[in-house]
Length: 251
Image (tube, rainbow, N blue to C red):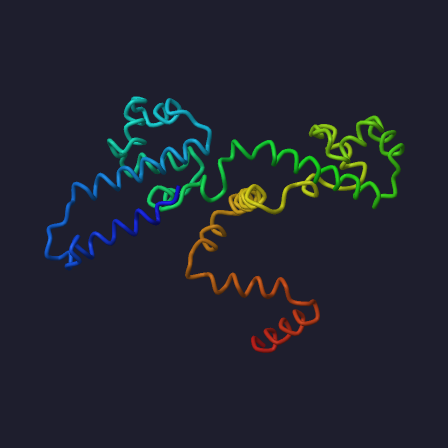
């Protein structure tokens, strides 16, 4: 469901009365405005909850409210507070701004419960293709890979064709045998891949010393970060020239 049309109609009521006159000549109907906003928020709440595959009871327990109250929020009969929305956003894996937007997750990316099987089938084929590519790059036959990993030739063939899901404990051994790390097989594109990449980047950022994190998070230091990035990407010879120039200035 897209709220853009409803939002446009809502704004037009501020601009015109039914006969086309300016709205400033007519008192604003605050009750109707609040009712409409509550209904829109309710739809977005239910959309986020369904997308995360959480029950009303799960969310109610998180916030220590009765399930009936959570249900009333989704029907637009009552409205949660901002702190409650913040906890729900964290729990349901959405930015809190989702709850004052105009697009549902279902409209943008589809109900993820409906695309799980399609995603898993596609990823199994991709992992299988990568395994085959890595095996051939390593110059190994199916029989050699089987002997080195104790995984039967038949199972490896099924894995490479994507006809069977490759269990992690076997993937770890097979990846090591073809001289690849597990990151080689990770999803690197699409919605899931982008999310995983962001989570990995955040993990590395969180592991940095506190003073480095504070420096990087300060918007005033963005110029220094751009300079560091440019230096990191600079060819060795050019970097050496820059270093010599800095040395000459300081001497």
